[in-house]
Image 1 (cartoon, helix red, strand yellow):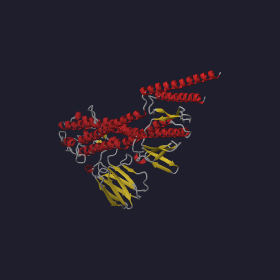
Image 2: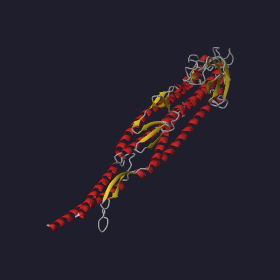
Image 3: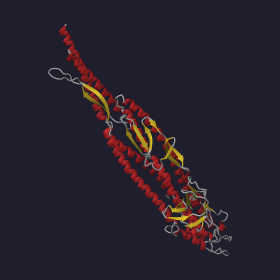
Image 4: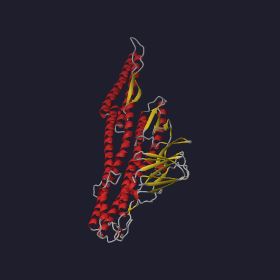
Length: 560
């Protein structure tokens, strides 16, 4: 009698196991297009055998687990790849925009307008008293300065856009971290009771991938199945069911742009900006602080060089009205001009604690190099560092002290504390502010002559200005045109480099995704084959119940 009951039991367990397998297969098929889904499979084990003559007899099959097909090492590589891809994607798109700003495809770019301006000076030299030629100079100078202003403003807008994206990225990171913490709790709740939280783990994996695209992360799983996530190299943003938010804080020493900060407790605030190494937020920071900053500085140097060199030559000449010492462009870069803190030419570090005063004037316009400098104080000394060359000089401070360097005269007075720091730039914001200083009704002020009187046929000064086009006026190495070409070339090389890096990383990421698909992806053909296999097994188990019933009926008939 017992052996017939065993047949019923084997059939019942077989049907239950195959039904579970059919259910899991259906779940796989339903999620064939679900991003980040990991294929699941039922793990079967034979039942515990029974001792009976002539030997042990089996008790059928049990579905003991639903296993998620997953390779943790491969997933880690994919996470790293997404970090880099997110970073490069931001840089690729932004540098392309910057490149477009400098690329002269329509004949209305800075380089072409530079040529037109100097050509108008050549035209004036052919007819020094010509009203049309003089008007053309003002028109061409105005077009050149307007275009420089426009490119600079566009660079500023890119910088502002990147800054806004930093804040949005922080918001996104915080939202994702909160979701991961919630899923940690669900995974622990399921797995502490012996279940496999496969779908929750897939959800968490997708969120980790989204997070990695935003910022560089490290994560590890504890014995409870919950993960701890560290972002930006030092910020624990998820631990078990808890999450901590990143934040942004305006940095007064970086034009008020956002730093990324993290507060692990009420007593500490950590600045993550420099420790963030990857992800889209790193791309935003790199474009904001480096790429656009470099391009703006180079454009400032070009604008300052044009204004300074042209103005020096123009001030030496005479207009038809006998005027002299007139600048064609503003700012003028004349002897005695004071560098202003209002436009950023002098910036005091926000952490300065001293009460000293710093005054900088232009001492020799022809000696200006248009580099950026840092002036720092330590003890009784001050040190000036050229940020372009890293050359430095140190002096002993006494109140007041004065010194000159590269065309600038510096006077410092008052009390300075150790660590006080000032950033100095003679050319800061020149590209933003450059204007034509002579009005359209003041064409007689254009100084074509070198003689004060009887100069209507005197073209010597206009020729001198025109010849500036080809002179090595910038650092003694570059003309205006060649320097602008070097800016375009540098940005082009950068764009090409990032495009190449992005293409290589995208290919690597696709390869890793294909490898993941081979491990964790759902194959419709394979799942349909499994479905038929489990269906036949289910039918066979059901047939066992029918056979058991027939055997039982036969036995009962005998006993009647």
